[in-house]
Image (cartoon, rainbow, N blue to C red; front, side):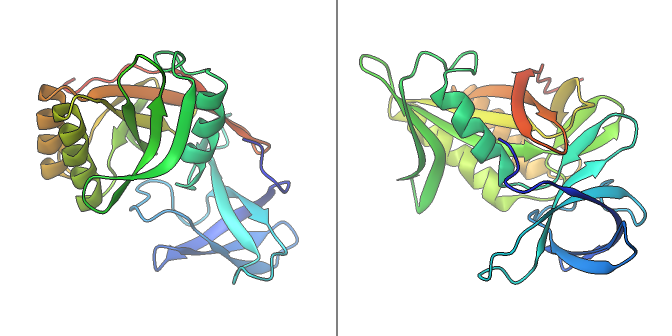
Length: 236
């Protein structure tokens, strides 16, 4: 998924009210950008960090910039826009580029299911059980190389795990897919100390037959693409 507009480097001044961030552009001017991330963004919103913004001239948008990346200035990037994983993953699924899901011909995003929920992707094919794929963006890293989910309590995430269990009980396949928007991650796990309930629901879902997959991302200021499989370890 290529960014529709070339990104601009900036320095983060502060993130506030969850969805707003003040930043300083290269010419010294200060702007406010939309931050499409409802999580805590632990370790990713420190004043002075180098970030990348996507400008826009859409009159329907209240802000002229969107915060897309954190530049760790060591060759690694983190994508902070939680809408990106689904957009990037859709293309990879349609092109049959994701190992373990490449044998499904039909990909439908945002399909209603369960109790007032929408599955990120419903994949179908003749002669195969439907597979319900729920996607989560992973950006937290507290230990070098180890990506963790979630970075804050997620009641909605726990509900999704319950919904996936119900799909398995009905004879379908269901998958929890963690897309790691960090280029410095080599393993994925759960942040059980941050959200014990989510971890408990995860264990129940896996015991019920819900599958788990973790994928890396290739990130540059030009594009974010789905990468290779990453090992998911529930207990380290």
